[in-house]
Image (cartoon, rainbow, N blue to C red; front, side, top):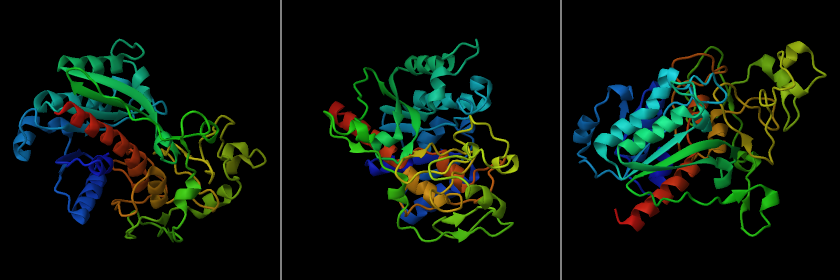
Length: 356
């Protein structure tokens, strides 16, 4: 989010992050680009917003924008959907705790769309989001929300996420209009650009370096590293472009990993002329034409990161259950920068029009 917010013209004062590798990534880019933002490696629940305001020399009501994307696993439709029973789900409300003290002019939040239907303490559908909205209103903010497709804003990825924009008092904010659409919708009344296929953004990259066996951290600055184990290449070679492993019913059970016909998004080979499926933490997609997984740099291209952006932390062949994020998962967990920029530019325009 910080890339898009900065590109829209905001000065990011501080970034709060718990994952050590994500902090290393933020710090490396702040140093390389000369940003003056403060990277705070901490559990946000242990931070005092009043003290942070003092440290940043910010008075109540001065801050233009408070933005964030708290952990989504407890609300994700792909997860166990424990909602507020999962302590990560409660982190959603930290932005309200900070807003109550800081009184920013605008709050900008990103979450998975599963939040809209997530259950609360009474096990009712949508209770978690209803509680969140009520608590925002209790501190005098008026929210608007929308589920937005990243591909609609020029990101080559079919990624849907919920965005909430809350303002003090009356909310006159309008979400930005889409700029892209499926090709069949581009010849109508609105002059949309067609969705971008991943082949367009993956061009121009050199051959990736092979991952060194037994090592989790790699020093190649552009993160263009092939993590494919030899055994996996055998099954990747059997999947046509745009298809997935479970559809290859002619293969034996061992190669198909016991997948059922319903597993249409697992072990997927992307198609050059189409946007990618949503990049996820649990697996890495196959390259559209080569017999390997996508590299972290290719993930960054699909997500809309600039090539100058630096990733720190391990590059793993398997994500597994680990306490800190590897480079593929750092990207999959993040907001596509072009989408964050589109939202932040709209917020900036709102602030200008309201003269606040």
